[in-house]
Image (spheres, rainbow, N blue to C red):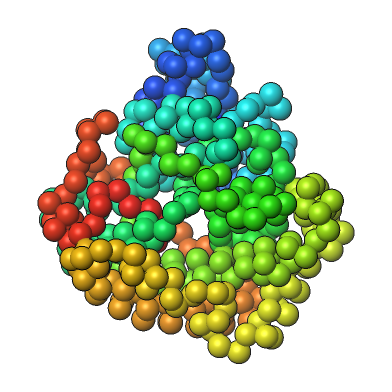
Length: 386
């Protein structure tokens, strides 16, 4: 399994504590299986590598299931999650691995059985290529969320009404599937959208089949929600840049490749990037020349959440109506900012927000903790990211 970390010195310990409390390790020990935990730090300028190495050393000495695990830090000088993902999948992970867990360093896995349930999902569901959990915003567990926090939760509920979701913060993927994926470095802001497209189409060799992504029951993690208007706008700008690039890459380029190249997609993309580094930026430039309006960057940019909202029933639909209206306004502004950034050639926009998750009240392990105020708004306790 891989933990991707960039300058997480002050916030990574709660994540590591929640990781090593997972029952996966005891289940592996009982079955005489082995798990290697690799923290892939990339371009860090703080003490993240040292902090993680010290924590790992303690686990290898004291963890009750230490015979089933090994830990190491891979310190990459280049900053960037995409390069870190490629290096882990194609170079650093053990070749005999059947399943690879991918996780960010700024989450908390608040159910002990999360990783084991995800692993079991891939073992028992033959058609599944990826197992995911339920991402929960930290404000879900507040006794009295503010108005802006309620709107944030409602917006996530709209996203969560769509099937086949893949949150890049935590997922498990079959190693054979991952090793036929290569993330172009200019993809930048939406690697989870690209991985979802590759998993659901068997690397563009078949029509979309959402059953390739399966939700593991009893599996959840918590992440810090964007609440302030400035943070929300920056996050939406980042996602729109990423979704535009995914649209250009998947719909306009990969779909036109010969079948033999799509069957060896990782090799095809890696070779393309090595021989013609600016190829993806050229494709993005061509797309922008054909896109005079920012709200046409990719299909469904403005109508996506409205469609999700239309799937809701009864009072839930109307309780989420203010969030829909707000999301349309935010989408218009964010699409213009994304369009302008892409016009300027910027594909590596990734704002880093300060993290306070370690102080967030969370439910006890394996116990749901819905907030009455959130339920009154018509929002389910655990929600995918916006």
